[in-house]
Length: 544
Image (cartoon, rainbow, N blue to C red; front, side):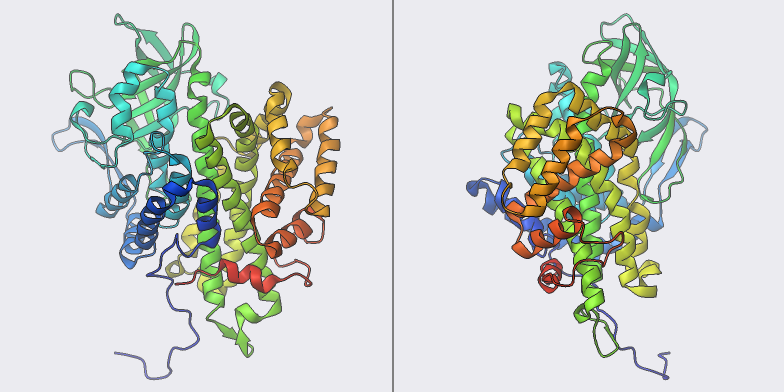
């Protein structure tokens, strides 16, 4: 029976039934900026289709179902036979199938593929971030496998397929396949030099038997995995298939699934290798070198995923405040709330702009762009993923108590928001990787300075920040203790330079004032009131 005591008024309508891509002006402009004109129509069509699916009631319901019914581990079948399989809710398979079908694993062999995929990754993360993990691992495995032409010929057509072929079957019989990764061990974490998994050579050249335990195995339901193990020649990259060449099951003992803070729909497991068959990828003893391109690709996905989470949180906050009234006016029109929303929008735009610029560098593939990525990827991974949690939590607060309720969608974003900062190397790992790039690869810093130098003279605050950065880079004595500070400055200067070049003047002005000019506080909503904040907020509105 309906209540009779009151009518429900002053509530924002659900943010549903809209094109997540088309409503994102920052993302659509980045795609237009970085893609060749002849690719734009096809890219817009595909991204628009994915954007409409992402914003649909159906996909939003699948996302809720996949998170409400997390995966379950089945170690044995009904007869007691060890099977080590993971059961997922049907909604998970629908989401993953949609992501594969949208080309989120097929960027490497098509013109503009990295930019198109990056934009799709930002969009699809906003539907449900958990299924993006296997999509990311599968995409990132390709450059590592290409070190072995025979393995690449066998696996790459299936990893880059747009067909989601679920179920455990021989890979030669599958139209599409997924990859996971297992490097982390409990005694070492990010310090792969401490791993203890042993690879013993077998009679067949290039094959090994593995013994050891992986503390985190991403996407354990996949068809194959890239792992690191200690062979006679040192750390070595190996491919572990779930099925052996004779179609029998490999020894892949799933001990448990992790009970995670967020990312609930996705399975992360602990796996035991006990006589597990593996095939070498790359040269023995060169495992880190072999897998480094995979790590770089997944780190970029951490940047893109965080950009997607921020965009969705900001879109929901602006949408809510554009409909909710308090004290006689819409929240979005009240000066203090407008300041908060504008500040959040700046962070979201800077993250998206940087992420798509990195994707464009991958598509270019030239020597200077590769050098730029060597420094810019860990810089972006460090900073953008760190900012994600702060943005999402503040956006939830914009909804008041509604933002603390599961039905708003914000709590799931809040739980997800720290993940990308932890995965693929946490903050200190990224900051130290920045130092390694600065010390060992002068071309990386040269490429970075050429990039930010393109914006010099356009804003005095950016020019001042570049001068301060150069002074700091000139003295690297005792730099490890201030590596985070340096990574932060590198990120902010790079974001500022990109916004000065590509964003509307009101956005670049606000960013440079608050992030580079010192005219902003430690919390969101502390921008100078003299700025054109209304235009910044309007740009972030998810028009539908």
